[in-house]
Amino acid sequence: MRKLLNKVISKMKGEQYELDKEIPTSYLFGTILGKIGALWRGFWKKIRFKKSGKHIFVGHRVKIKCPRKIQCGNTVTIGDNSYIDAVSKGGITIGNNVSFGRNTIIECTGVLRELGESLVIEDGVGIAANAFIAVRGPVKIGKDTITGPNLKIHAENHVFADLDTPIRLQGASRKGVEIGEDCWIGSDVTILDGVHIGKKCVIAAGAVVTKDIPEYSIAGGVPAKVIRNRKEKEE
Image 1: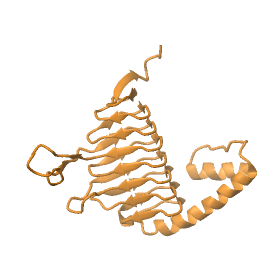
Image 2: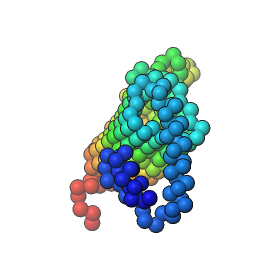
Image 3: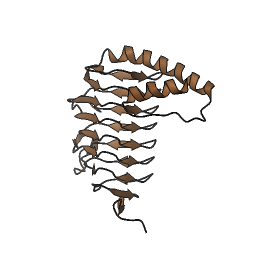
Image 4: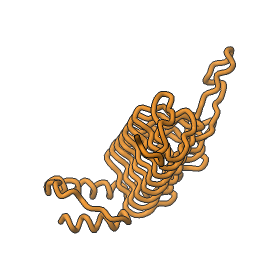
């Protein structure tokens, strides 16, 4: 059974995949049953998408609003208790082999008087549990990027210059957020509006990213600062 599963998963993902030999058979059996249920739920969800590929796995208690604004590729997993509100100008585009951990929240629009822009998630992205992505300005996550749990992305900043007007009435700036390909974003990282993180960066757990991070950087802290370049040999 294990060899058959390896072949099936590899074919679905389009890349070599091999299950750990220490996984108990009973655990594998339970996982297979769960995946069958998720695939069934995914079938009924994806028929309302603007466009979808094969093998959409949807967990329990997942809520998706405005599914006609969603396009996704093959082998996409949406974990239990996730919430996706796709109402926006450009909608949500999800590539192949993308996974969202349980309790993920994607909120494209905050107030209906000004719709959010768009969210693009490229192939091979893995977003861990409890992520919150606020898509007010455009948000893009490059291929093969992975994140730890509790990621927060805020693609908007409130204007607060006028002391005589409530902040909620002063509008907001929306520069957007872009994360390059093949990055590792650690757990509890917050990324604020206007930030561009270059390709192949590592962002340490707990960092608050307020400014651009050059490609190949390792960065951390509050606010996040570059610690070193990955191309340099560590002393």
